[in-house]
Every structure is written in C-alpha cells, then in structure tokens.
Image 1 (spheres, one colour):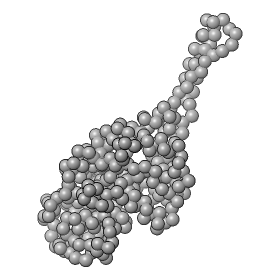
Image 2 (cartoon, rainbow, N blue to C red; image 1 turned 180 degrees about the horizontal axis):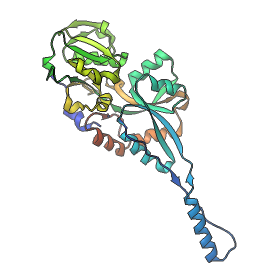
Image 3 (cartoon, rainbow, N blue to C red; image 1 turned 120 degrees about the vertical axis):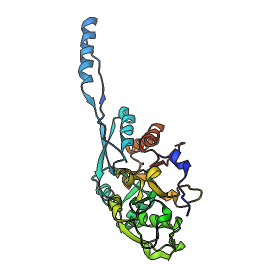
Image 4 (cartoon, rainbow, N blue to C red; image 1 turned 90 degrees about the vertical axis):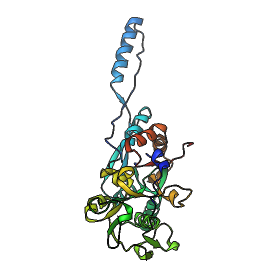
Length: 308
C-alpha cells in the first residue's frame, strides 16, 4: 500500500479560526458659521475632535463555525474594517447545529462544511440555504494509535478503525480506506458509500462509526481513526507530521474533490446580500491565503480561484 500524501498540496495548503477582533470606524465633521476665521477654525477643530470620538455604524455579521481554526477571520475583520463590517464568530461543537441555526435565523452565515455535506443536509432536512463562496479543503487523514501501530502497513485483521458517522464524511472515509487498499466499495455508490456497500474486505478491519468531533478523543481505543483537517487541528494533530495516510485531493485524479471544498453558506434569500459578498471577497484575498498557510502549516488547502 502506498501513501498518497502529496508534497504539492503540503506546499499550497493552508485549515480552524482564533479570537474575533472588534472593529469600529471613526468619522469626523467640520464646523461652520459666521465666527472669525480663527474662532471658526478652533470650533471646527473641536467639532472634528468630538466627532472622532463617535464610532460610525458597524454591521455585525454572525458566522457559525466548528473547531478552533479561525485565525483567518481575524484577517478578514481587519480587511473589512474600512467597510464597517465586523464578523462575530458563533462557535458550535458538532456538525448538526450550524445549518439548523442558519436556517432558523440564529446566525447570518456559517463556514464549517464541504459541498457534499451541505447538499445532503439540505436534501435530508429541507433547509433553505446555499453556498455563496468556496473556502478551503480539509483533507481526511488516517491517524494511528502510536501504542498499537506505527505505519499503515501494520494495520491487520481485527484492528478497529474509527470513521465519521455522518453519511458524507463517513462515505468519504470508506473511500479513503478503499484507496489505502483495505476494502472494496460498490462503485455504483460513488463517493458516499456506507458500510453496507463494502463488497470485499482485503484486510478484515473492524470499522466503527462516531461523531466527527469525537474521533480524536476515541483514538486511544482504536488502532487508527480517520479525522478531517479541522477536527485534527483542533485536537493538536497535523496531517503533515502525525498522519500515516492522507486523502488524495488532486482533482485530476480524484473526481470527488470538487464536492469536498468547504464553503460559506447563507440563507437562500440572502445569497445576493452585498455585505455577505464583501465577506466572501475578503476571504478570497492573498492576505487570508497567507494566514491559512502560516497558521495551519499544511492542514488546509485554499480552494478558491485566485482569479476571483
């Protein structure tokens, strides 16, 4: 079995989001009237000083996120300062809540999921939400319990492998196990097979399902766990240094990659909101790309088109 982790995406990667910066804009005004020039100038200066103490109106946008990889939002807030826009992060602990909160109007946007997850949630739960901009790819990696195995080749019959329990990421994890040579899945199921769609075990592993955010915590009870970049980063794991096998995210050889791009989502009625468009535009900047690359050291890949 050959490890597919590619040096090319390590160099281009950026994926989880720190403290939110409070930003305000300040305006100034000038005095007027029939006072002597010196008096008028002094009055104008005083008026300008008073006005400078009054913040201009700031539009706050609540964005739902999952995990602790949020440094890029600090950069975005800095970029949006002159536009009077401030992003306030609303942190959730699981993948089920942010789409519900967005659909119900508790938040304005969210940024935690890939396109396949969003499409499945909309289909299953009837949410009236859409993606309005690409962000990153957070590759899945296999992380080993170092007390049990040290390489992908050491996984053997009977070893427990933990995978995400949701349909899209669970299917993605099964495809990764297929890519690594452990199982064969029914090709008719595309990139979202279930355990029932495994047609052959080349190694008789025991696949256990768990909620994505818990996988790092249960790793000590398994031989290995398949964890995405965001949850891995939150748990202090780095796919470049700590994984034993990583998902192929080269779109030229993995046709599923376009569906694995993470997105910013909004309610359908707000898809053309000008403030939200400015947030997407701020995300798609060299400054944010640099933040992602510097902060996450290969955990995430910037997925937007630089020509945007």
